[in-house]
Image 1 (tube, rainbow, N blue to C red):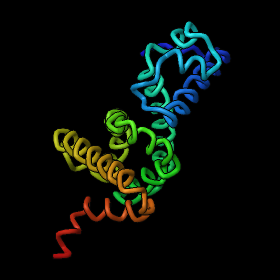
Image 2: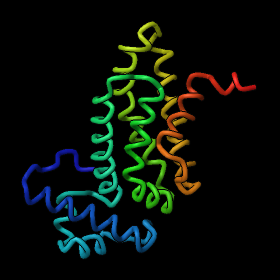
Image 3: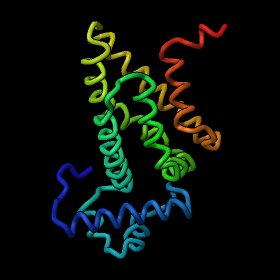
Image 4: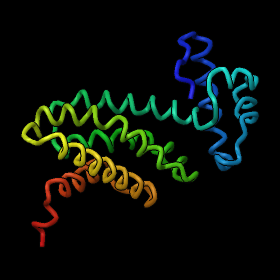
Length: 188
């Protein structure tokens, strides 16, 4: 992945066109069958412009998901209440707004990249959560807590998409909250 992206307006516009082109092509054919030439042609750009901005089509998806995760992070920063319910509701509500993209990557067997990004961005959220809710736990516990909950909420998201996205974000948040707070065991 190109580590230094240009802030030049033409470069920003080209990257957007390339991202849009890849997403449109993914609606039409499998991701692994899409070539850089097809992406460039669909974007109305030459391949040289593609390679000036990205190293691969994986790099294109990475940038798009990174931007999505930055949006999600803003939703978490706006939370007044840091509970399993409020945090998971913000997460599921965010992805509900991007359900078409989730379906697209699920259809192309690329859903794991959401987990990879979640693992990258979740620690930022958990730092805030730790400061307010989990301040009495040590860093080792929190490290595993973060991994456990990141994987769990990602699997819930994947199951939701695979099952047709029937539940509302509120329903998913309640399920996540009940699991997190150990409530299923109280219903025995």
